[in-house]
Image: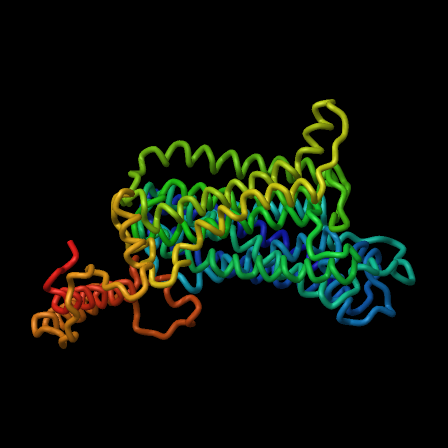
Length: 520
């Protein structure tokens, strides 16, 4: 009875996902507020039914219900309870249920912690989340049902793969999936912004906290997987460039670039189209990793399945998601202005170089992972791309990446983000800043004691502070969790204006202290 309840809960979750994908989106275009307001309860309802299904499968493991095929294949009565719990996601069907459950959890979190966002925007975001859930729920119900029964039921199960009976594997998959699925939120915000035709600082600010949290989970998941591979598989190292390791590393690289690009879009209104493309690419690479793990096209100790039917379904879903999002991007992105301008030598230019290098590394990993498949499919024979090739590529590009990051390497040199100069003026300023004991205004300058703030500065400070509190006080005055407090606020945080004001005060002090021989 319990497995049937779990199966029925999945069907109800699919029904809610269908409604969630259609009505809020339609309401955002038609201007129907009642339909848009359905988004939040639908997301919470979908999570409820997914949680019921997850709990039903967990109960089947803990009670040794071997009439369920998945339980009989991956557990036995003598296995410790902690490994019975981890066995729930130790194979294909259960790990897919974990994926969908976490997808519902992320959607419910967006619905809960984004109440101050514009209603059309949040309706489109949750609708995109519903579309993704439809694909995975259909995949589960049609090809990978974790509640399938077997009669007569065996007296004992087969046991879980001994390699997976490890405390690290009880934590590694949930953390990794939290990162994978969390990137769907960044993807949903990007698609929602494209649908609305408005890519601005507000969109980037709303998306950045979710992307950062997903990146943290993905980082922890990859680190736990490396630790497990080191002491359990006996590879003699933390990383072996296994195809499934690469499948998790590619979205991490792109997500790292996305976080930096979102910061520039939020504060400088630049990189708009590039940021959207990174958000689409990060989640697309997560889906590609799912295809590689579950289709059987690559051989790996991490692989879950070798069923070609499942691989075909995932590939079709991958084509729909990537093709549809890129088509929308090609339609909407040309109409989006480039945004803020920046100098050739500036913090933004170095962040752009950083982004391009991270994207290039992700493409190299993708090529090295898929090259054996491409060669074999083209009839060119079989090749193997191993760790020497990957190590060589990273040895070449990693120093450039570190160089782009090291903008404050020289002690006393001004950050490159503060230099708004032509390239010809960069060298003299760096030489001047690096020279020990030199005043920044040259040998002709005389030091003066810093005076206190001018009364005009104090009055300006009070006026600015009062104006900021009036202009940017939005939303209900109720406490929110610190981690997501900035999700629903104004497009630019108050700390930005505070830093800018202090910079103005220091500049005024510097002018008063170095009036004779002042720098140009």
